[in-house]
Length: 382
Image 1 (cartoon, rainbow, N blue to C red):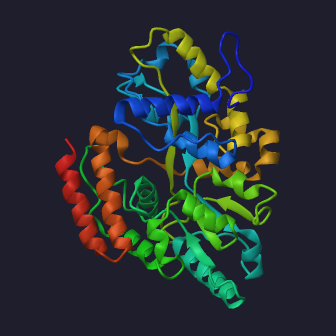
Image 2: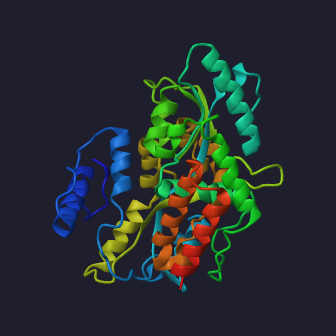
Image 3: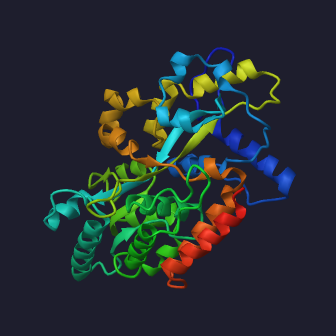
């Protein structure tokens, strides 16, 4: 059961039922798709949750300020509430947060004489190369210094947003909808990322999504990994080869004058304007985002709570030790330009990940890739 306890009047909801309902709706609207897998494993449940997005057309969402009291809303991270507020209307409540993290092997850093994780991307490249060379010389020829999500997909957009902001390249699109991506700091960020491919990262990293990167990392064959929080409980599982041998920290800065940046992701809950039971729906939203349920999801699924106070919870800090540093990491989140781009975001993101993937594959220079992104951005943004 996804929700093993239930509030009065609300049914407990099996996750398999939710997934099957989504699958049936997909088939009805778009024709048959791949079979929906029933999975009781942590990764299965986590990845299925990631796929249940943007299926239903719900119409304009209601203003949740009318249904949820201010004292409850004020308990959430302010930047999440701000992100979910459009023209003064609170269109959704944050369910859980995703943010990019740097995973690193504590045992290998100690083995090779390092006292802590890298602070800059340049330090990461140096450390990754030294550890990679040492592990390969010791007989692990498939060992990699750094793995990340480099395939032509939204995953790469998330990574690129982090690289660009960390080097002072801005947010791709300004608040006035001016496309700001064509600047020297963006070019520096992309050239840096390209330099990893074939040196500290495998050439195949340009085909990796989250799971491909995690498989290499969790098998013990990488010193560093960029990924989302879901990978933590999987790696910490007692059966994992790296259990007890890793930690997480903020992603590096772009040089000494750069900034830490973690791409902001996550899930939001909203109520359709067509709902015939908006009050009951608001009750469900309050329940699903309650401290009790968020704590359970953090422990069982590795989902980051949207309530800051939970990060000080003794049970959570005992079961997920890195949570003590989570507020500092979350303070450095950077959003993709989805709010300012509006309905044009998908086209803008596609331009980003397709051209940046070409840069990583040496099919396009960083300068040419940026020009293509700028051209498309100016064309599609209203």
